Amino acid sequence: MSIKTIREAINETLHSEMRRDSTVVVIGEDVAGGAGADGIDDAAGGVFGVTKGLVGEFGRERVIDTPISEAGFIGMAAGAACTGLRPVVELMFFDFIGVCFDQVYNQMAKFRYMFGGKTDTPIVVRAMVGAGMRAAAQHSNMLHPLVASVPGLKVVMPSNAYDAKGLLLTAIRDNDPVIFLEHKTLYDTSCEVPDEDYLIPFGQAAFTREGSDITIVSMSSMVLRCNEVADKLAAEGIYADVIDLRTVSPIDEGAVLESVEVSGRLVIVDEANERCSMASEISSIVAEKAFHSLRAPIAKVAAPHSPVPFAPSLEDIYVPTVARIEAAVRATLEA
Image 1 (cartoon, rainbow, N blue to C red):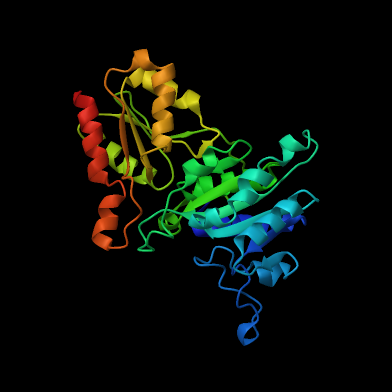
Image 2 (cartoon, rainbow, N blue to C red):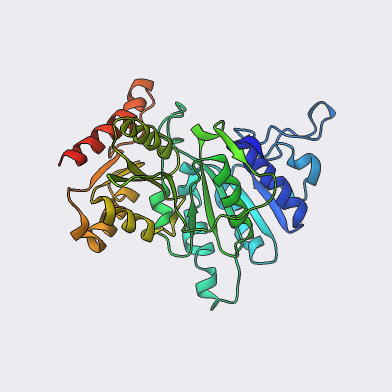
C-alpha cells in the first residue's frame, strides 16, 4: 500500500479508468492545455495538475480541451453521456456553476426522469471548492448545498486520498450524474491508498473518531479540523464520534441518528454559509427523527452569511476554525 496525496489518487484513478474503459473521456478547460510545448505532448493538467499526463497517454480525442464556455462544454458532456460515453468533466472552480446551472439541474439531473428511466447519464462533474487559498469571493465558495438540493444528482465530498480514489471509482462507474467536489486545500494531504481498485458506496459515512460523549458531523476539509478537536478532547478523557459524511446526496442518516441516540449531543461543522447549509439540513433531520435523544441543543459551526473575503486575516476567521469548533463542542458538552 502506497502513501498518496489526493491529487495523486485522483490522477491515478483517471488514468486507470481510462485504460480500463475506452468510453471514459476527460473534458474541460486546460485539461490538455499547453500540450505540445517544447515538443512534449503533455499539459500542466489544470490549475492544480490533477489531469497531468492524461493527454500524452490517451490523446486529444479522449482528453478534450475546451474554450472558457462552461455552459457549452457541460452541455456537450451531458449529451455525450446520453450517447454511450462516460465523461469526466472538470468545471475547475465550482463557483462557475452559475454559468452552466441550467445544463446541470434542468438537463442532466432530469434525463432519467424525463425519459421514463430509459436513458443513463453516466457523467462526473469534478470541481474545486472551498476557501483558504486567497482566491477571493468568486473562486472560494462551498456551494455543495446548492447541488445537494437537486433531485437526480449525487454529490461527493472526499476528505482524504483513500476516500477520493474509492469514491471517484464509484462515481465514474455510476450510471447517473455525480458532482465530485475536491477541496483545494486538501490536494497535498496524504494517507495510505491501496494500488488495487476498490469502491466506496455512496451514502455510507465514515467514523474517523469514535466515542459516546458527543457526535460531531462534517464533510470535506472540515473533517480534519474536527479530528483535531476530538483528539484534544480525548486527551482529557472526553470521546467523540466524528462522522465524515463523504456524500451529502445521499446522506447517511442512519449513521448520524444512531450516534446521536447514544451521545445525546450534536455539533455539525460545515464550511458553507450557515443559511440553507448541510448543517441546517442535518439539524433538521436530527430534530425530526431523534429529538428525544438530545440532551442539549444542537450546535452548528458554519461560515457567516457573507461572500468569502479576500483579505487573508478575514478569510482565516471566515472559515470555521479549530478554536470555534472546540468552543462549540465544549459548550454543547456543558449544556
